[in-house]
Length: 503
Image 1 (tube, rainbow, N blue to C red):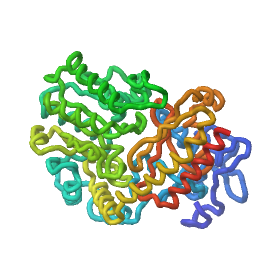
Image 2 (tube, rainbow, N blue to C red):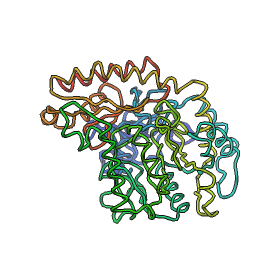
Image 3 (cartoon, one colour):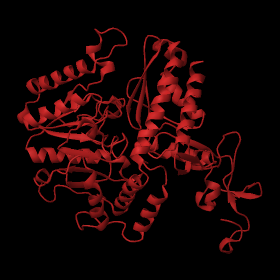
Image 4 (cartoon, rainbow, N blue to C red):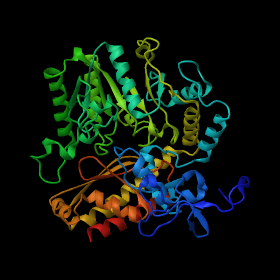
């Protein structure tokens, strides 16, 4: 404690900084025994008890980082070891005050930027009125108001009945529960390369990487995989001349395989639902051809299979429309929502037609924090910001600028290495995949994927970007309200980083 506080201690305590071990403090718990309680260091007493220190002194990044690395579960993957203390707009700040341009948006979550004033105010006001109104006990006002805000922006007026949960994975499981209840069938069809979560149920639905399910078997049964129309890696492209891509052939092949699946592995009479991401997320930010999605819708309708659109990452304006499925003119039977819905507050949900939702008996759905009142208030404010600041237009304009610079500047930088670039996506959900004859040679030179090296160099240049998929791919998911100035700064940093990596 500080000198004289509460009339105790004439000397305050401090975590001792030690140049040899490079820790900012000494603690027997972490095995650093270089300072004894009561020793003097820079005019203050050294102690190994955290409770004796002013919080401002304890917040050294090394101290916090060491605690995090030792006491946060090792199973949590982490792209950086930054210790951040605050964030605003398109930037995050470390405890030392370093500033990073954030093109991750919390993996597509902080849709209105970090700590948007209207979101902060809405949450603060709600905390003063009602924090927790448990959904199995009450109907609370923020949830009802959120439903009224959501209904007009749904892909169809038919989607009028909602269930709220906390995370995207939980919402996916809610959609699967609903589909099985409503149809009386059990099998689920998923897309190759899909990501739907890491819970014990959604692991079985996730096929983007094996890391998400390795060692957790046996997984939930009744899940069948069909090819996603990923033109760059479709077997239909192998017979075509280099650089020639035919989405129509990819679509034809993928539909043939889906129809074959229904004949060979999971009969329509056993199949409750087909779930697909409207834009493939962790699988590489791949946009399916419109014709493919429409044909899938036809097949589902024909066989009484519910079509579930997973909009966890692609929803709430990310692609320039409220939901990416709107680009295809297809209406799903069930739609899954999360991430950008509340600018960082934990809330997710599903929406469907009332006649489908009403097939579930009372008590079959619920959750302690389902539709938390504060999160609902933040979601309402998020939708208001999207309207008031015309964020859909901003997404479209910033998207054009990013795509323009990527196509004009990125491809020429890599041509001399015999590397091509597939630049794809919708709105501010943009993927860049590196491929070509020179890729393996550059991999050897870098001792990593090209995307990983570029992301690492962007980090050194104070910008946060992510990779995605098993292929050599990076992705850009900035806040929906990123400014033109920050967009240009981001592209400048990217091009600088690419040059530094390849040269």
